[in-house]
Length: 328
Image (cartoon, rainbow, N blue to C red):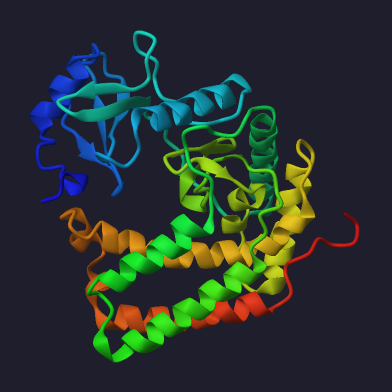
């Protein structure tokens, strides 16, 4: 098996010795948390403190890219933004053992963020504004990538074309419609924005709720348009999205200006995510965890549904972009 997908040697004993190498002695077993890209486990140490350890997927990010994410997270913490930071041990946040890079976090609990709770949504908007205000005061990431069509569209299309997942009876229609979607995104993609450091994957599942929001998992942090960290909070029909957008930006703009021209990128970004997600699953299919977690991916019904999803996204791209209400 390609080492890109190989976590076979990541045994409980290896994890125990990895933690011991940084002065942490696990007393409980390792409880696997919901993560597929990396391997993430919760445990209790000898002082009865609860931690989470993340072992990074080999060959995905290099040390400089991971460290850049850690430094950004710590800078947000310095600005009193509620975020789950890596633990600093002996002046380091990134450690290595037997070829694996790993990081320790204090375990943070919380309830699920309620997207339909407008008070919570506005507070999330405020903190996203604060995060982006910090980002604007820093240079763009030097080692992490910038969102663009090559990684999300062209590489994804090429990978899917080389794969054997798409059933023969819909293959022609699938790639015809995918190319139409790519062309529509190309026509609407705007690169005339200033890229900033982003959370990158700010969907509701990466926001816990306690007395307020707690942002977790910056593993996909990269440069890009500010709206990338906002659009995944919007759902429902057009009127619902407009209301949610107003609420998010009401909080956001208390701390950070927002370029309303970026609203034109929402549907192109949704299209990028649609195509990239399919290719991500195809790319990771050799990892034994993926067929278990996503058994439907290798089923004809899934791909028939994706043809419909692509058509629906094409239709969404033909509609007028969301716009702010006149009082903005």
